[in-house]
Length: 103
Image (cartoon, rainbow, N blue to C red; front, side, top):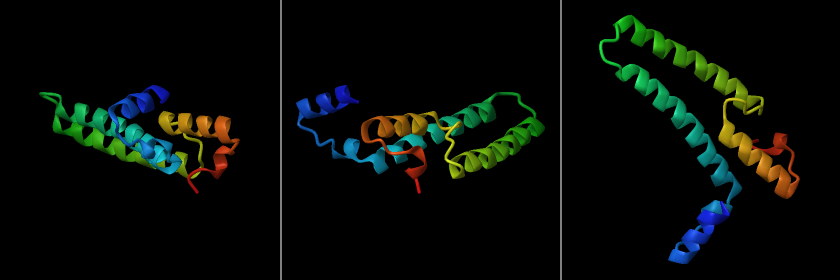
């Protein structure tokens, strides 16, 4: 992260958002969830895939959503590696327990 900030500072760009923990957590969520959407998209784009398999992939994704929701609600972040990393950084730097995040 320091390298990114140094690069942006060398260009004269504002990087205030990179110091905002809520914004960084939102970005981490977006990165994690977008990865899952990308995987589903790739599954659905395969050529010559029977319709039943496409429907099955969507159904499986819906089940994943339930697991992801539970993971977020319980603040485990097992399915959200970027959020988990942000939580570790916050805990190291600020001593904030993970359960305090994302109230």
